[in-house]
Every structure is written in structure tokens, then in C-alpha cells.
Length: 445
Image (cartoon, rainbow, N blue to C red; front, side, top):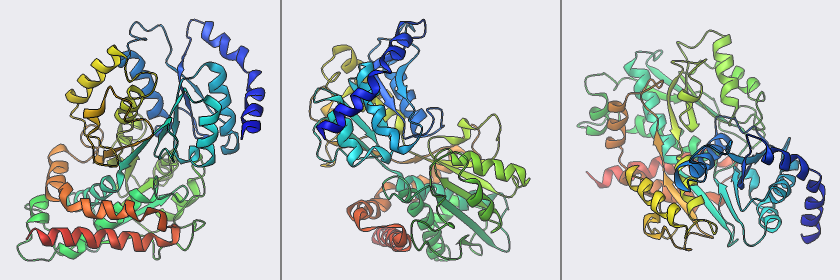
């Protein structure tokens, strides 16, 4: 490992003059906080961009080192492919990084160890959508995006019926991922697809206040929800479910295939391939009949210029706020008076709710070392209003009907068993999830 790290640093020293040149220019970057992408572009409208936005927000509003706009933002590196990611850690070291933001699961496993060793024991690595993996200088960020996926699935069913877009009394939902990863991809898909099963199981129950409270005067009982794909994935190479990468452009083929199944809604979990799907829908002139659910961030706003009225909602992860809290909890900033004052104010004013694995409230640990080496968990949510078709009142009705208490057991079971799942187990994971929601609902009757 030491030889590998030394090699990476040797390779990247040649880049130091270029980095210094940037630092000496009028638009110098603040390289003490440095983001290495997952081989995508920093402007990917997803993890990478959200991580960069968090860093920029931190130096402007929390640490206030960029209060007067002296810096263009934090430093960053965009590896051209996954195999080049470790070299990005070396470039961050050369640039003077003390906090490294690592968006996405490509930074996990061996890469996370390389990042930690390359940047040194005095650094802090923040892995978005990952765990510290036993490394004391890493903060992990994980999200209950399974809940976000469920709410987005229920919102898709509701909005399709409300708008009268169902065909032959059926609402058809489709989803696809870039590559199989139950921490970052299938968790959205499991929640989204479980909404189909939960809706179908309870829609004809007498005196069912859950769906009645959502649909109100809209007739729904005769309308069935179903999955677009005719079979579940056999493995991670199944082209009906996975595009095979997270690279822009690689989602066009699977998007075109899914459109032939005539779904009402498609949820891509593949980073910039959301743009591939949107492009295919626009090319086929299908934007009135096929809507999109985004993931990770509010995609309706990210794509608002070219694709207005395409998105019902997005299954969101609060990447920006969780990354802000993680940077504030790093070795470099946890005991900084300005940072502590501002992050506590920000946490309260934005009604944030984050916990560690042991259930401790992150709010109570701000200003201590106790978040280092731990995972911060953030609850899921869905987008509404603005360029989203889903309105706030309807989103609130969905979340009030299927309150967190109904989803908690299913979510906990999912994460407790996450290492047992692979691509071929998507049906099992989804069925377990929906069954436990139904069980929790029945307990409350």
C-alpha cells in the first residue's frame, strides 16, 4: 500500500505547477477542501455537483473563508475513468487538501483505503453514499433513500391517476440503474417498486383511510399499478434493468427499450443518464404520456431549462446539508468557533434531522470529535412544487398517510440485510420491504 501511495504522489507531482498556477490566478480555488469525482463530471446534476455545491457553501456560509468571494470555490479533480480515481487522491494531496469529498461508491473499498493513506492521518475523507469501513479519519454519509423511493413511487401512482393518464385501468412504473449497488442504486428501486405492491394490497380494503386520505375524491380503487418489465433481473448484467455504467450517454439504449413498454413513469438511478432518458422521451415526443422521477437531488430544477414539466418528483437525498455537517465535523473544523456557531444555526434553521448508527442525534455531537469514523444517516424526502408536477399539499398527504413509523421496520430490515442482496435478489428485497410496510400498517389498526 505504501509503495502504491508513493507512486501516486510521484505521478501527481508533475501536476503541482498547474495547480499552483490556478491558485495564483484571479479565480483561485480553496484547495484545503477538495472533491474527487467518481469519474463523472463535477457538473453532473447529481452526487458530484451536490458535493461541490456543499463545499462551496461551506467556505462561504459556514467557515466564512470565502465570505468576500476571494475563491472560485473548493478544489476538485475529475478522473477520466474509474481506474484513474486513485490518482485523483494524489492530486488532492499535492494541492494541499485537508478534507476530501468523495461522492459515490466508486470511492469505497480499496479506493477508500488508498484515499486515507494518500492524504494522511491528519486528513478527513467524507464518502457520500458510503461507510467509513473501519477507518478513523473517514466520515460516511448514508441516506434512507429507500423511503424516498417509496414516496416517489406512491406519488407516481397518485399523480398518474389524478391526471387521468392511466391506460386500461393500469398505472405502469419502470426503473433502471447504472450498475448494481444496494447502498446507492437498488435502495431507490426497492422503495419505488414496493409502492406498487403496497398500493395494490390496500386499494380495495374497506374503510381504508390511508389511500382515501391521499386520493380524496379521485377514484382509484379500480386502477391497478404494475411494473413495466416482465421479469426481475437475473444478474447485474441484465440489460432490462442496468445500463452497465454511470457514464453520460450509456443510458440511451435502455431508455429506448423501456419506452417500448409504454410506462407512465420511469425512474432512472444512473446519475447523468437521466439526461439520456429525457432526450429519448423528447425525441419520441412522448413527454405528455411518459413522466420521469429523478433521484438524489431535485432533478426538475436541475433540468428546468430544457425539460419543463417532465418530472413528477425526485426521490431526494439531502446530499448538500449532510456534506456540510460532515465537513463541519471533520478534524480540521470541528472545534473552529466560527464553524461551530454557524453550523449549529444552520442545522436548527433548516430543521435538519440526522443520526449516527447508534441512534445518537448529530445535533448533540456538533463541536466534538465523536462523528469522526462514524456514519451520518439522513432521512429521505421527495421534491415538490417549482418545476415538479407534484404539489406540496399532495406530497404532504402521501407522507402523512405513509408516515415514517410505517416504513421504519422495512427500512431497518433492508439495511440489516443489505450485504446479502445482489442484483438477482431485487424481487426478494422488494417483497420483504412491502410486506413489512403492510405489517406495520396492520399493527396500527
